[in-house]
Image 1 (tube, rainbow, N blue to C red):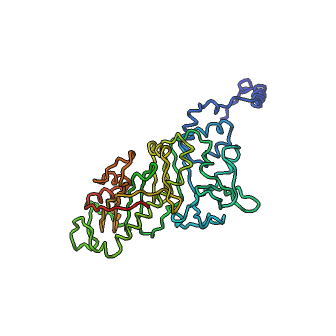
Image 2: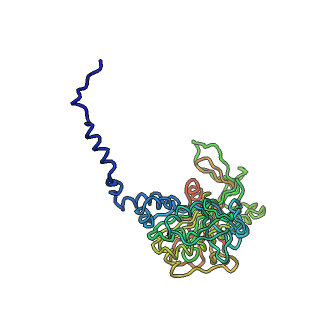
Image 3: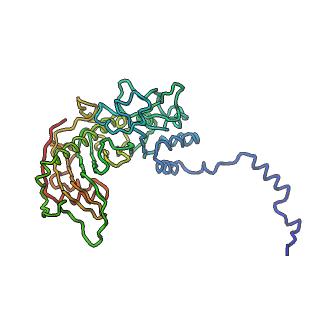
Amino acid sequence: MMALVRPDRIWPEPGDKLEVDLDLGEEEDDHFDRIPDSLLLIVFNKIGDVKALGRCCVVSKRFQYLVPQVDHVVVKVDCVISDDDATSSGACNDKSRGGVFSSFFRLVFGGIAKPLQAIGQFIGPKRSGCASSGYSGIVGSDDDDVEASGSVTHHSPTQVLKNFNEIRTLRIELPNGELGTGDAVLLKWRADFGSTLDNCVILGASSVISAPIKSSSPVQEKEVSGTSEDNGSIPESFYTNGGLKLRVVWTISSLIAASARHYLLQPIIAEHNTLDSLVLTDADGQGVLCMNKDQLEELRVKPLSASTASKRTLVPALNMRLWYAPHLELPNGVVLKGATLVAICPSEQTSSAKKEISDGSWASTAFEEPYGTAAQLLVKRRTYCLEMNSF
């Protein structure tokens, strides 16, 4: 049964409703403005990505003022252009990983420039074309901002990060590793730099096999053939079938890639004195270059020595320790064949490189799981010492 509503109980009254509508037309306080700047900076720091921060800048003048104050920034690179491909703007589609061995390589950022251009001086002047006369470094492009001639505008990270005044942690991510390896080959490296190489750890395997997990059996290390007991020594076949030569190539290639990355970071480090941590990695997880606060300060005080052969940091004379296992089975069931760990330190240690290479304990913590476990197992095996001249 429907209840009757008395007219004098109707709310709101027609007159009041008209008054409310009129009030809505008046300018009201924006409750978002009541959020303190400190809280907005926390949000922006959680965002991190430089492209997203660039888009935030066009939202309001307040955002435009606050974004340059963030202290955590992440720059993701869309593609790498080698020196040979730099003369063509279409080279951005080239996925070749051989650029690290050319005189330099360029890192291209897609979709950054347009949002940032909207806020005026946030980025420096534009450059046309993929090629650059004289400057060999990292450049960024805007896929949406293509001139009538068809050329693409580029921006270096130094320009992109120019007005970020308070950066403390900076992470730059390449689209892939520089070193070309087979699909089944494992090659990972981590390097710490100051003004030169402080230390480097390389983990490699000739093949990676996913095996069923044996819940009842512990982590195992055994010979591939399974016919002889593994005493931790390198088998004679390692020297005769090219195994040692391949590991030397891995080592030199990783050091060249790391030193090339370090060289390209110079202008960014010079521009941002507030940096406490800088990481240059890649989406494949192949290589990671790290610099902490002391190492960054060392580079500012003591300029790096550049290689005369190519635009990269000179690698000093090195002491190396190598551990090898023909067959290494990890707890998650993954089997590494020809597993190799190489720990590298300069022959003459600098003040910022105090890690001991003798026991290899620091090398065993260089990688995330499951490869951290692989490194821990390898350093328990027999150690082989090598030396390498500066290059």
